Image (cartoon, rainbow over all chains, first blue to last red; front, side, top):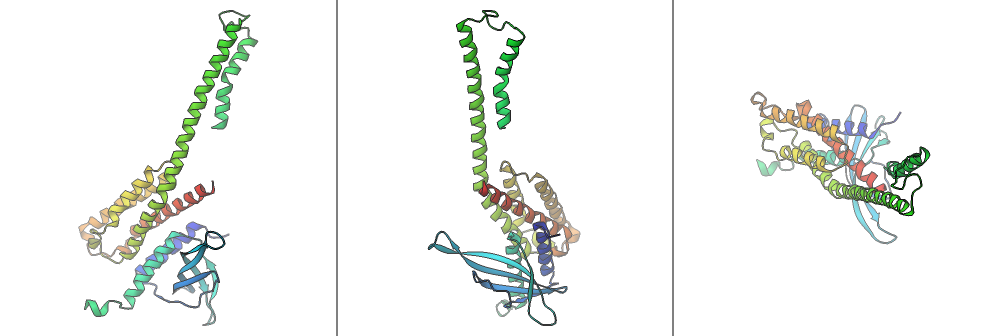
Amino acid sequence: MSYTENDWVRAITKLIELTSKQEVSWDIFSDYEDDPWTTVDRAYVALFGDKHYAVKSSRYKHYFDEEDWTWSSKFEFEVYNRANYSDYVKIASAPELSVIATLFSVVESNFAFKQDALKGLLG
Amino acid sequence: MKYLMIAAGLVPVGFLVIAWQLNWAITPGGLTPSVSDVWSVAGTVMGYWGVLFSGYAAYQVKAISEKYFARTRFPQIKENIDAITKDMGKVADKRAADLRSERFIAAISVSLGEVERVPGHKMNQLIKRAKLEKKLLVDWINNETQRSVVANTEANYWTLFRTLQEISQEISAYIKEQGAR
């Protein structure tokens, strides 16, 4: 058995729903598994149930040929296990889905709101 | 399509063979056709094939133009749908009455119509579902008794969200398939 793309979409949508209802809360994440080919710009993690869900906005070099390249951006969604405050262990990463970008933007605005980003200005 | 073409091309040949086997007098010269009879039959068959091939060419040109139309339209449509779902995710904590002024509700119908107008998309079921769910959402928003209910508690809000995501997913699968061809 394995998860289909549709399963991932359903799961991530559920997470967006929970985020919007403030039932999961996100924090800045830095203990993700490194990949030498990509630079992570921002990563958030949330604990729900016994799993840690991470969403990352990252850049990678997109090569046209041997020398020419540009930065390309992508969003990644990963699931981590963490037993008794030991290291995070990645157990799954989602395929490339557009819903991850949506999740990231929801998480980003949710995080800004949680941190009272505009508090002093709106009072 | 290829086999249909070959079959259609063989129809006159088959007819001639049958006529010859059953001794039908299909030419004015009777069972012993003259030279001009043979040429007129050959000319008719050639003309028939000409019509057949030009029809096939026209069909292929149409298929190619549809393919390129989809290839140029779909990335833009996908971006629009993704923008809608992003908006939906962000405003999900608003109340029903506040959603009335949101731009994305009108944009949903426009984007669904755009997908529908691209030929060969095979997403009719999804679009039909999305339209129904959008209608339910609008009904819910306009329901006076629900004014202060928050959108993210409404199950249909997320169903519509998921359907739009599925459409976006289908489109990116389509784009990938077309790129591989």
